Length: 352
Image (cartoon, rainbow, N blue to C red; front, side):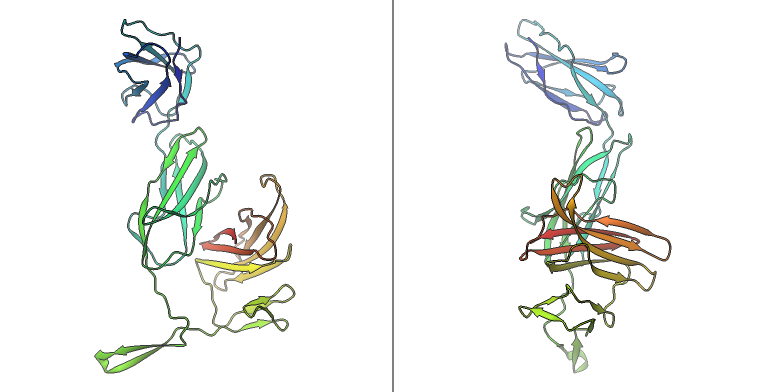
């Protein structure tokens, strides 16, 4: 009779791990763990412990090395010291150094905006690649509020745009992930606070009593921004502008300079038409956003996507796609989060 060894996830040799198994037979009194190098077949560890549990803790001094591939064998002893049969092939596993897996948010950081692009830092000494990651926002009570879901595209910046965070509120941010060989990663719950200035945008004037100077301060919280349209704007329900056959340009009193995060909300986009153009007069950067539909190699059927094209006078030009989302109907609102950091952009879409 043989013990059935459970899957052994990759682990750091300098930390060790616990191998678990299933055993059907006489009561266990001792367990032997034998580990061999996969390539040479050389035995590098052979230990026996007194235990009645179907588990064997591999110690940190087991003389395993990170970056190597091993085979594990488990046998058990009963009260009469009879040893079970060893597995024919054993269970393979990898040893890897613990990766660097960190979020851009540190404990007790203060975020000064309602939206934040959370970045993930990953590196591993033996170049073990990251297979997938997930970034999740939690309330102070650790209730899940927003999540990126499992993201398998790890070729570009590892990030997720968090939006609609409330002022003067505490949150937790957490990232989990898995390497291509199954090493599980977790940053844990990172506490942070959101605190930003909320202008009284519904008042034309803000009136403040300045007793120290025996006066009253008047402050304007609204900057007049006049949009210039190619044609007369048609309004829907008194709150939405129909721009499918029109263009509105905002230049006076409206600037997007340097790094930024913006959220756009719109309905019923026209297929393959540019719906947004932004220009930075400082460095000549220009971006254009298009609404696309199609069946892509990894989209599992026909889906929609936002395509962003960015270029600058320094020769930078690249095309970036948002996450896929279902083809919107006439009532669906497309919420598009756009972030710029340096010369690089990120774009995420939520359909409501």
